[in-house]
Structure formats: structure tokens, C-alpha cells
Image (cartoon, rainbow, N blue to C red; front, side):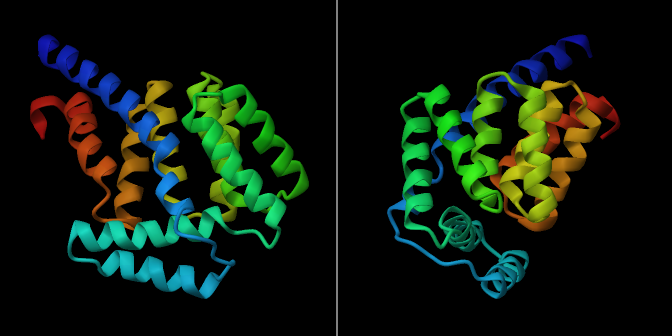
Length: 199
């Protein structure tokens, strides 16, 4: 049992490192697809489609459409340009510069939800766990179905060794996106860590 827990602890660390990397770069392709204005009805429709999707391919396609709306959810060209610049800084590993840029963007446009989410990701990568958690809570207060933020919450709770809370977070991800690779991968690892052979 002790050996099994050690093995899965290593798997958790590897997964966390991988997921943080994915969180930092997974929006680059979305930026290339152009802009989309805020449309609550479109988001509602897409979330319903996400729940009804029957393949991971279709699910991924819908998720990319949702990300596109979130990333471009500003009527300001300046703000959208700042978002793109911040993501580029993240991809270059220039986290301090990216954090400052997103903080300025939040000050200028506090309802730009994805700016909060990006800063939460950066702060997690910088080891500022509590600050990251606060930003995640802001995101979820504005968009409870933000599967990226819920997944990020799971990462934070794992970092804080609240594995039960992390499991609840990833199960919520599946209730939003049943084909989430992150959640489908990490849930069995968390369940084995928490419950061992009982599952």
C-alpha cells in the first residue's frame, strides 16, 4: 500500500507539471482563429452541446469555441491585444511581465473574466497559491461553468494536499465537460490515493 501511494504521488506531481504547462499554452491556437464578441446565449448553447457531445473530438471542438469566446470577451481592441500579448509572455516563460500585464488589464476592465483566469494560472506557476486561489474564486463567481478555472481549482487543492476537495473539483469538471481529458486522467489517481483498494 505504501509503495502504491508513493507511485501515485509521483504520478500526481508529473500530472500537475504537465497540466500547468497545458494551461499556459492551450489558448494559443484559439487566438489564431480571430475574435468573437460576448454572447451569453451562444455560451449557453455551447455548454448544452458540450453536455450532449458523444465523442472527445466533438467535445474538444466545442471547448475550443468556448475558449475563443472567453479569450476575446471584450469590446476593446486594446484589451484584446493585451490578452494576446499576455498569453505570448506566458508562453515565453516571462511570468512576472505577464502577471503585471494581466493585473493592469483587470484594473482597466474588471469584468474581463479571462484576464482573472490567466492571472490565476500565472500566480499558480509562480508558487503564489493563495493569490491564485483568490483569482480562481473571482472567475467562478462570474462564470461558474468555467471548466478551466474549476480544473485550476483542482490543481490548487492538490497543491494544498486537499485531495478530497480536488476530487470534487474534477468531478465538477466532468459535469460541465464529460470528455475532459484532465479530469478523466486525474480522478482515478485521486480516488486511488484517497480510497486505495476500496475502489
